[in-house]
Length: 268
Image (cartoon, rainbow, N blue to C red; front, top):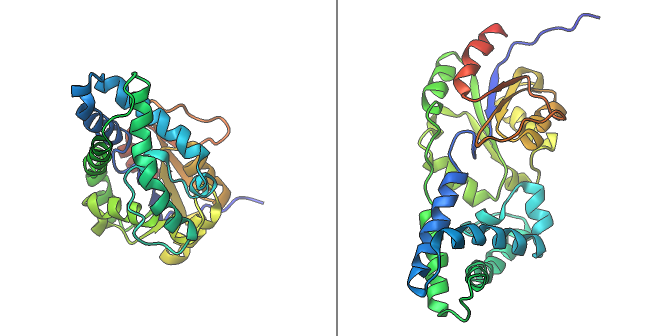
């Protein structure tokens, strides 16, 4: 039987490292906090690097790792999420647990440079500096023009992002293109994250479109592309930060600049 082609009606976007810079802003926040320890003789660049590794180690050993992994919430995000709302019991747990986690990251990172028993107020200040410095949401250069073009062509636009509700909603609101989207869903709001096709089907119901009429766009093959494949969608993989493509989860279109979507969509 000949396969019937379906017209594309909706374009779904991942958020972090697809629409907005995430890793680079996180790196800058680590360095901003680490610089506060320079008067103690710490090397800020090394301290920033060590802190990221320590955060990941403590996070993986913590009591909420399985939940965080399921919804796609990272150790670095744990350093600045507010956990202000959300129905899952783990949200309240993370709100309490991350307070000592944030100072422990800097205390253990300083110890790697032989700086032990630092003033607790310094650790609090470093944690607060990271919390403040991380709150930036710059767009990738092609995004604003691309979204405006897609909107003008009549596509429905959606955001499908993993993470805890308040943090991802803050990013969405802060990235200045929210008005162009018709729907958005955060994994922590429904306790279901990419690559589970459930989150894809959820936004399809909100938009009133079939999965086969959607394109999922993202930078993570194992989350975004795999989720699209499982949900029966076409996919676009954008290579950010020299990420390696995946033979296991091949995208329908691969590119380094999402503007390449425009001529590709016209062929569909």
